[in-house]
Image (cartoon, rainbow, N blue to C red; front, top):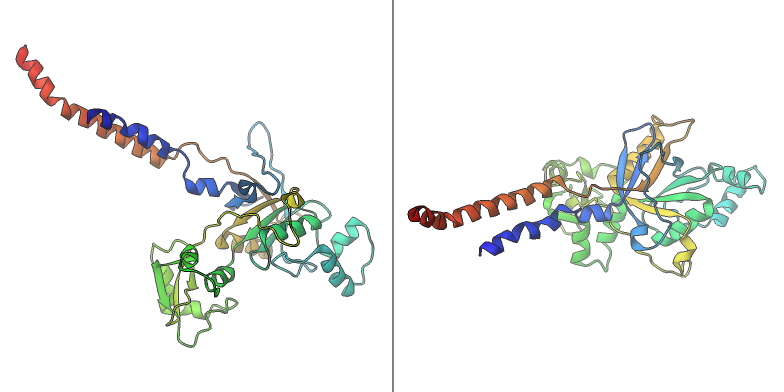
Length: 323
């Protein structure tokens, strides 16, 4: 029994390593001239896309910052699912500008004539197809942001299972009901979110995302939405058949809240530099040890030591009687 107690610290030691969230959120999106920084999942963790080489702010090294692009005059497809040729044809038809140089084509689409970071919404096509089209446009990095609308579309699909729904929202963490005449599928307005019963869904501490999503159940039920960027598997299609087609672009995925923040920064222009919002994306270097888990390990050690001391009380008493 005493030997088993001494094994507890060894069993607890692995808990001090990085947890599952650290393994998924392996990338960082940082905005220059701002405190905004977001954790993201990376396609590199799934074995496709360009690698996010670890960049540490040490020995004078600097991260490479690129202009962030989203929904420009020529990129009207916020999902990033339109080929470059099709975008150019649409822009040429509505513009008097001409020219076949790289700079002219970039200007036609409202893109910078340099490497940039492209922000697109999730949905419309596969992650790999988004990466291919972004790579064609000259993007160095693709950021895919989840949206509340896409979360609802996935959980309310005809073939969605209960497990699929549990991956998108949790009624146990908060639930409410919109008014009977509220259109809870229209995410362009906040009318249904203004209902008191819906605010109750996000009013508690359990709903960390502070967002509700329709559950698909009756009575206009809405439940607390999960907002954690998951891994991005490589899905083959008729357009992208091999991982080598998207090997020159890094792809990361961020949460709904972080995507909304980036869009707000683009609109406000508060952190612009020369009229551009500059961002960098690099590999996260998480701490090797989680302080909370270290405390658990120390507690386990203390428990073992105390148990050993108490367990040896009889032996100590016998030794004292022999003296």
